[in-house]
Image (cartoon, rainbow, N blue to C red; front, top):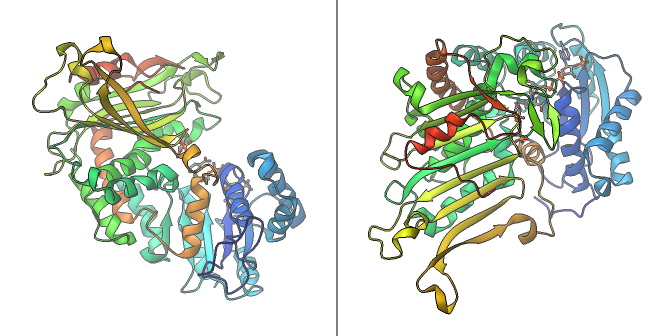
Length: 502
Ligand SMILES: NC(=O)C1=CN([C@@H]2O[C@H](COP(=O)(O)OP(=O)(O)OC[C@H]3O[C@@H](n4cnc5c(N)ncnc54)[C@H](OP(=O)(O)O)[C@@H]3O)[C@@H](O)[C@H]2O)C=CC1
Ligand SMILES: O=C1O[C@H](COP(=O)(O)O)[C@@H](O)[C@H](O)[C@H]1O
């Protein structure tokens, strides 16, 4: 592999082993425009796209190659910061693009993909499926039947993989009938986030944490993934899913895995994924009696966001006013093994919360014998706050003596803070999709989800969904609040509270 290039400089052929051709299905959709083109452009700007790399956009709309390039350019203008737009790189990036109009369910158009492949070099083909999962099977089959694939072709698929365990198996079977597991890249974009990756470094490179990371030293773990946005025109999709399927089954459970897993033998994809699967298998299943106590479902009603009035979930465009779909979920769960016995994991995630904020808080146990002011006892435990977004960073809350002659031995809480933006100010923090696309090009799978992970995650969620069948409507919470009051009661019943130093 060669040296890293300067921004704006493309890699030349033979430089390294990430030369690919990319066929992007769903090329005119929201994900492609908001995330994939900006990420690919940034990779090009960083000199990480090989000179010969080409992209074929595939969608149903009738547009010629020039029209397609104009749409992609517009997407870049909209989603890349003005100061990061480099005209020469934009020109080079657009020149890589071509377009193929087809209905992915019909076999006819696929010959054009094979011809596009044959007109290129012998680069491996990466097929990115930025379309609904119901199309994955057809696309894989038609690609194979048309002779567009070879033994090096890879496929990238987006979440959600199915709707439950049974449907996820159908989707995985359909992809697996064409691609072996070693060439399937299931995206969970949280795994591409800088701080999420840092969990591995934090836990396994620092002996300080390695020795403390278990039920002897940790009292409980909190994970909050709060979103400020509402449904954003996605009611049709979201109402069938709900926040449990949309966020917990994938992103939050991946975070639980990275926090709870045992050290892998090495950094190979399967070594890491084997450890994650052990965590998923050890997650406490839900039983009926836990529903009222350990799980809170919520749905937002009208409220405010950034000082503006916003509608409730049932008043959003296309809404069905009877819907019981949850836009918020909080739960107490656990990992039933020696490392984590008796350590609750409190999870919560919701739409239309006051802020976009994702963080993990590791609460360490108190000292066995306390010698300071009894009034300060509640203070006396360390917390490790891992901030995933925004303002990525890690802070360890430690206790020191308050300064001043008149303070006696008063304790004061303060953070040892590593702010990624200022600590690594010279380098831009890349978007998750940049890293994930680069890893696909390199053929590295450690940031992607293996089939058994998806299925164990569904099995656990299915146990909760089954118990919900007879549950009453979700609890209401005003848009712009931290969720239903019951989610606060859920944690306070254990003598704890959600960490609020946002
Ligand atoms: N948007 C997001 O932020 C996220 C999306 N995802 C997943 O990514 C996938 C795509 O989502 P999103 O971009 O939002 O979806 P959109 O509905 O915005 O876009 C869908 C794209 O698929 C194309 N398409 C649909 N049906 C066919 C067909 N029969 N033949 C050919 N092309 C077709 C559409 O083409 P045309 O425009 O020509 O009709 C369009 O380009 C979904 O699986 C979604 O769950 C996952 C995480 C986040
Ligand atoms: O996968 C999804 O994630 C987004 C939240 O992602 P983030 O990177 O902005 O935290 C969520 O809004 C969407 O509903 C869900 O499908």
